[in-house]
Image (cartoon, rainbow, N blue to C red):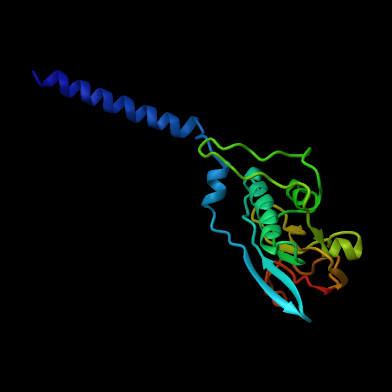
Length: 213
């Protein structure tokens, strides 16, 4: 009486295991970029100072390094920009950091160029997203404002099985009535095999700007 039931159970278990194996090997799970974006622990650090009786908001942010998930990086780029405008509430502000984006990337355009024709943020398969990007409030880059272009590179790092990475990833963004007086002069070409090395403590080189309030 019990033997057929055991055989049936074993057959079902074997078939289920085979199905799970096939799913894991051949069918990619659906990834919700909003779920991935919200799972990241990247944090905007923000403070407000008063200089010569003038308020100034200063913040830093380290963008997720998710080159293979551009939608996630676009979500973070758009939200951190709009959050800065919300926190500053009309006051001058500076937002600097390692954004893990290149000047020619879409995320750079989302931060610095007005208009929504280029890109729409992805929809979520899991959540109802109430956030709506403000494409009319954008950032200015200190180096581009002063020099007419971004630095040649700000990161020079070793990448296994491929040429070393040498690109601009770091920026000093700002908004308001601030004027860029000068920026730290940067080299056009890296030295050595890769950073960090004996004279460069990080794979990133230092960038700096002086503003007039």
